[in-house]
Image 1: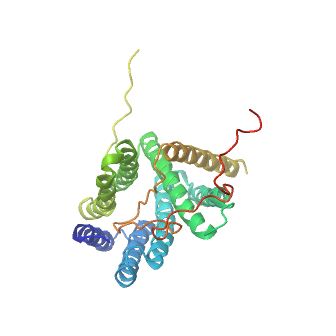
Image 2 (image 1 turned 90 degrees about the vertical axis):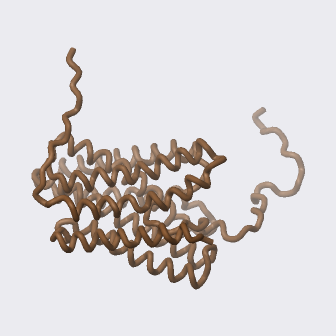
Image 3 (image 1 turned 60 degrees about the vertical axis):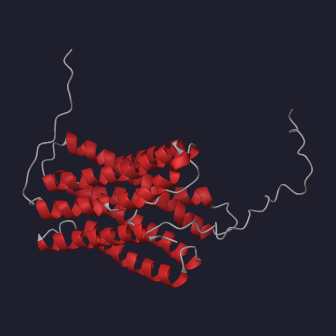
Length: 232
Length: 72
């Protein structure tokens, strides 16, 4: 059962998610970054449902377990769609939105097919295994896509500060979870510390996005550093 | 048409890269999951309900010692 610290982090995270949507609404960025805000709003609704089920049924109850993993898959799909909308923003000048949409669907279908291929021989709880597998695979796809997007931003010399900040914070967010997972396996004796850190890392993305919408004006520009060129 | 095929190729490359990365990570991992959405405490996976000991796999019937493989 989660303790006061876990509840505090969970509440802080939810408040930050609400702050993202409120800041975007106030600064007029809700339509421009609609899918990002949809992800945050869905996360708030899911949190409400999870809290309700957790308090009424318990932490290890099948109700909470199923709700947690099924809603996590839903949120991962929403985050994936939000990431694809960032691709559409970055490639908007190349008039490639149509291809970005097509690529998003192809990759999502490919990931779903791969996930099904991995779990299809399971004899029990096939759908649950598929849902968790899809969520995990989309996480790794998102991780790779974020780094590819950052490379594209550098290559295309993207200058929109808001967009750069959003992409970078997403990259840091994915990397924090990957680093935590790696450290947990490198130092299994203190893995409980790294597991509790996961919740804290969950607050990073809404914090960074809320800051971005609140503090960085839409027309702000920045020049990303050039890649180092070593003279021969 | 060729542009669409290029998009499909790129999508497949990303999928292969991501699944390769996942394979490397999970092979060296403890089998736990990476949950990266929100701050809710993560429960055990749906197929690990309760603390009951896991039964032996169906292909290990009885307690007889396993013989060497036929090709040794």
